[in-house]
Length: 305
Image (cartoon, rainbow, N blue to C red; front, side, top):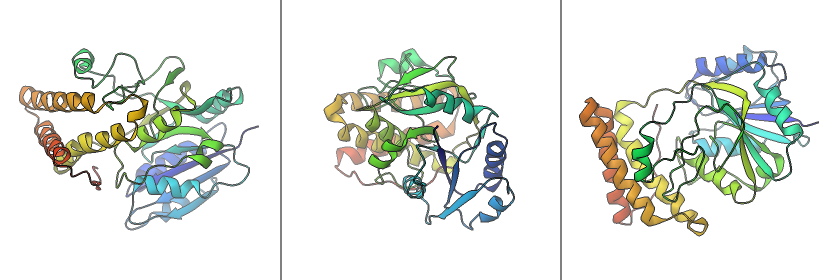
């Protein structure tokens, strides 16, 4: 029988973390180990004491960085843990989510390395056929495109195989955790660090999305003053992934086509819907492209929410 550990990186969200922990405490099958990696200022250790029915291991990582927090959490795994996963702190699990995930793993073949929970409130893809022209998205869920863009997964009615998995709602075989780590080149919030990690695993293992293992992700909107940073991340972090995985068919030419397409789409939405945030995002896209052309490919830290 599998033993499951879950790692939850958190930063300045005590109320969200409390809701997540309550949903974990309400599971029909609880995790065997739960690790909270706190990058908050001040720390939110007090939230953990309010959920006494969970035996929680607490780790402090400050200043916060999502990739570093995830790696630090996995260093605390108990020796008998056979499956280990990551949950974002703004998630609420349905009562049978962990049981459904473990039921899948009980019969999973050895070539499956990771599996994702099914996000019930995931936004459906929009403008897919237009985005397809620019190599930004695809009607096929969970594909890694040659441009470095992952196609939208969305809510799934049945189990599907995928090229990538959402980082904050996944479970991995222990051998994956022991042999792979999150790339700490991705600083701060770590935009697309989950795509990089899961696509690296996909080179040798299959990845799945499990329809009956359901949860909701209550993500916060990006702060207006952070939209330009997001736009830069959309270019710089994705170009980093493309260069890193070029040997597997990712293309810098395709990445540039997608980058110009992204500027066009963000600017078009800004004009048609009078949305300042998309205009700032397009501005960030252009800044990121200029940095790439100038050979300035340094890490971009920060947080969006």
